[in-house]
Length: 309
Image (tube, rainbow, N blue to C red; front, top):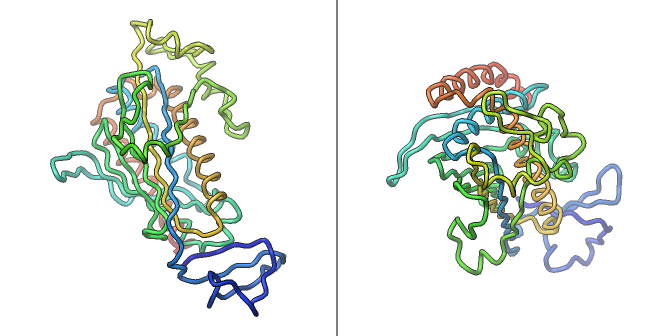
């Protein structure tokens, strides 16, 4: 089922061909109409973007730091009837690829824009994320509710460079032309929304006791190649969005572009500023921590199921 939104009043006595056999109603606030139908004649829209995140961390260090930060962020996001459920976290091997498979549910009822909450039932806002981490390559995909009609896929390559490689994901030439390349600077305060800013998670103020890295100045990326005592890397994150919501393309594109940049920026600022907490950990420590996090989140899951089943 698809949803069309229109900001004008439409007379059903003479509908356009696209709106034949479509049911409409007006919200209690008036002025906005919704039509529901299969609308199989509408084509898919695609959105491609590639975020490049340069970090004063090695590719090997990042593997531990990323997993630690994901576990911490999952705990921080859970509460008040919303948050993260970890359904699976297990090794996988397929077609010669080995890694760690995770299946999570993100309960996002209060974290989506109002136009999505108006259109979608509560179950649609439970986002299923399936991830295959074959580091240094990782990919994730969601969402379960809309099946093939709405899909977000994130593919990441972690490279020991400064973000100068083009088309690291091997897209065909025509698709690569459509990719919007976004550069994320974790030390740029202007890239952080005021409501997200935390002084303790500001790379411009943080100095690592255990590694001596930081604080990051305005020219830190230019200076990084000359610092022999500080490694560097780039996370190339390709985001592919496929959707078939007629009339919502601009809203969906703008929302996703804004949120993905916000997510990647905040996460990597945290990862760097938490370095003293994870730099001495190994993968065994991480797996043990992930299991502890899963148990903590499981204690919250029954409440989430009651509220949003």
